Amino acid sequence: MGKFLARRLLNYVVLIFLATSFAYLLAATNLQPRVYFEQMQPPPPPEVVNAQLDSLNLNDQTPLAERYVTWIKGVLTGDFGKNIQGGDVSAQMWMKAGVTLRLITVATILGSALGIAIGAYAAVRQYRAFDKAATGASFFVLSIPTVVIAIVIQVLAVAINDGLGFTLLKYVGEYSAGFQGNAWETLLNRVHHAILPTLVLALALFAAFARYQRNMMLDVLNADFVRTAMAKGLTRRRALFKHALRTALIPTITYFTFTFGALVSGSTFTEKIYGWHGMGAWLIDSISRQDVHVVAAVSWFMAITIMAASFLSDILYAWLDPRVRV
Image (cartoon, rainbow, N blue to C red; front, side):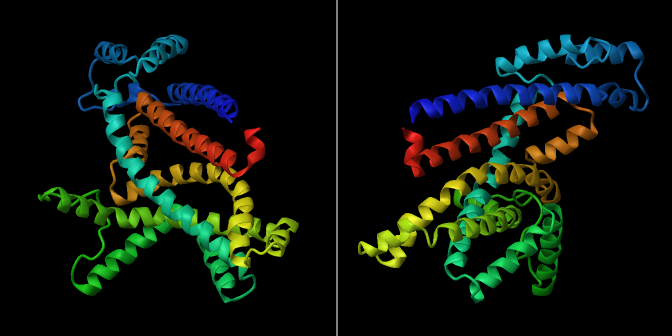
């Protein structure tokens, strides 16, 4: 198992390097940092613009290969360069990464756990009321883009607050502006603000996992090893939980990597809509500012998170399937 995980980890390191390099090259080719300075009022002289772009390693008159080598050398030492305003990209990235990780980690746990549980139970109750309700809810959520779900939930929150006459649901920001309190009160305030954006991301995961887990569970319900387990004296519930569900989870764990990638991209719009200053909102703002280094840094972060999810799925896969360990 150790050799298997080591090989997978080495593959992921190579993929992260390639993904980050391609992201930088695409950003440096398509974005135009020079326009950011030329649109200032009054516009600075051309020599001043060139000097500033040179200091930031963003001058389009410098060969792309030379800019890339300078940038990648810094990345290998933990320095992602300067943003177009002269700030340290690395320091800002770690601060905003914490915001995004808090959001997607909780959403991943809630959405995947709920989806797996509902999908497995729906398979056991095939064609009954619970199965039909779960199937309808899953297809309904899957048919709606994440950005639309985020906006609809925000509109509903506004309507609910107006109807009640007080703010029950927080739908803007990571915390209340000007809030002061002890550590416990601050935590509760942040949790209050995190409910709706977390719900948006968890819904998308729930729908995907519920449908996939139901299908995988149906494939093993009548398998020979399940009937053999019950013939040896196990109750149906224990046989389904210990043998059928564990086997049905193997392809679901592999599927997790693909859904996590969609979750990370969905968080980009969710953060922007709900006023969270995380990596997703930072990416959108940086594109509008023609900020090459920030776009590349966010792409690196997204590659890291997706590859980390892939590595976690490899560990769970090896744990569920003994054949992998040998």
